[in-house]
Image 1: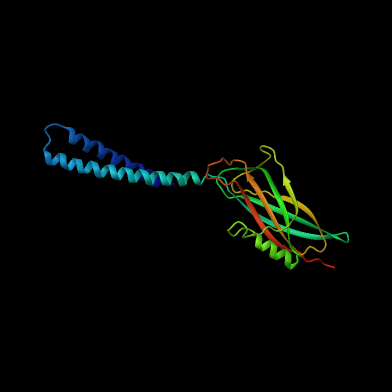
Image 2 (image 1 turned 90 degrees about the vertical axis):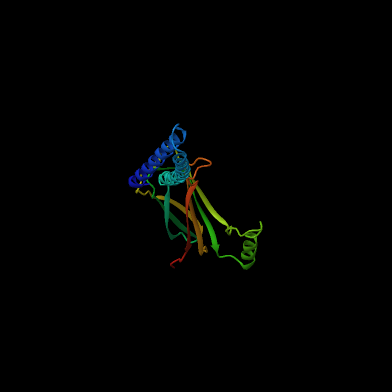
Length: 214
């Protein structure tokens, strides 16, 4: 919330609060004519409603203020491959977490996962697709996992300041006939607390076609 809006809401709340106090006092003072007391009662009721509305607006805007200070990473990935030996491929994945929030973000743990899309036979595809409806609702396709690397982390080992980025690279070895893979990376939010609005972590997914030069 910017300072102008915040100041305006506080001023309005102060004015409404003053009206409530003054009108309430008028209804209690002896010797005040009944029409004046009636008018003061009406003003007091209207001011009380206005105070509730303005308080709600202030609380909502204030919640947005705190939300802007939640940690957030935007993950991009670059995947490359090359032939090694006569039967294998070297696949390198570079994930770049960028801190797009207004607070520093600490990364302690994460993982990279390599999944195979092709080659695959028709029977395997049909089974894979049927499994996505096994629990009565559409789920993500569970492609066969070729390899997974879990990135361990220590406290304060990796801290990304607002607006900054950091590269994390992982390497895989796959057999030569691999044609298409899915590369998935995930970084856990070290500041996550159960019940908060913060994300548990951030991820990126890349579908990558492998063309092997002879």
